[in-house]
Image (cartoon, rainbow, N blue to C red; front, side):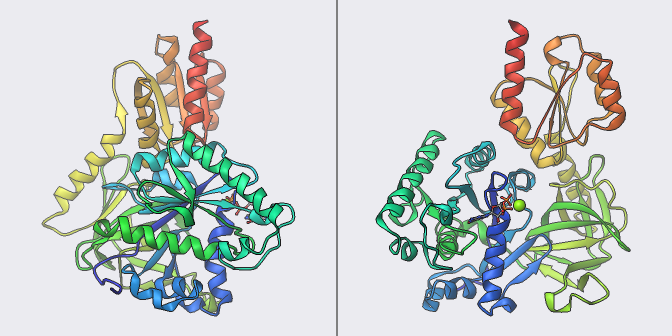
Length: 451
Ligand code: GDP
Ligand code: MG
């Protein structure tokens, strides 16, 4: 076996609670390659980092492993956090093919850890759990960049048993959420058991294991999802809509299928009718060595999946984070526009029926919130993307049922004039950046009102 030219790079998302080490892990994955003198091998994308297969197998000390794998490498999305994941949709479900859930082994599960696991369960995304910060275990002797078992075997018996106990707690918490798991080297069937990898993002211990297990998961479970046609019209997801000096509004996208070229016509999801526009420039980050160059970005004429790239084009105001972006031709543009429009409308809700009002920051996170509320059988009157506005408050004020004079906002702000308005109304507002917290808060509130 060898790398299969028809398979694209799997897309990996890093999720977990704040401060448990997402950024440090991504830096380590990037940085250790720089330290190994392999910086050239790592490709910096817009919003993502690509680690090629050679780099991963070298890190594991056995270049012959390369022949065992058929994927070209791994593409890590750099905007870590469960928010990113919830907004990262593709037509089939989640945009990320694989995920890492990171948990501080000394602190255990926190709300965003649990939320991440629920999201992965819903999307059936294969993932590993990394139990981070093992270097903080009392008495731990760090062995920079060693694989986990090698460093574990060098620790004292007391330290090892301390680690084992902490690991059992993680395994117990996973069980409570409905996942069977084991330390990764004891897992025989990754379809039935989640592998838990103890690591230190700070010292690099266990990082090689993480990369190997991800490759193994990609190999075993994803082959069918990774076939792509490098000549087909590109399909991607908007990561972020960003103002750039001299360029105006731009889109950072992850392209997960096909090819996209300068001059292509694209259709992008927005809150109203989808945007139709023509690509003025495709931009990638400049290599670190050229950091002093005038322009922050390097212009390229085309890119193929999987890749993170910035699109400069006219008329991008109103484009929606999490929305689809697709290359169209004169023959396909009408059909594609209709499809994108109905994809977005499927998530938005605007009815006359009674229910609560919800707002979220992206189309993907709105979809996640709607799904969870439906599971709880909480009726929704209106669901939309954006900060909470004066108009939202006014609409809700008109509702008679006191249980539904409620606005639930996920990862959004309340605009200043809406805040003033709120003071003079009976509207109750719930804001949080964890979906399960929002739902629990609302349910608790309803219970209290009924008492
Ligand atoms: P994020 O919020 O999940 O992105 O977490 P960060 O990567 O920003 O890490 C939060 C804090 O934990 C920072 O101060 C890191 O230096 C520290 N940290 C992350 N990983 C490790 C680790 O493996 N060991 C130790 N000792 N500290 C770590
Ligand atoms: Mg971070």
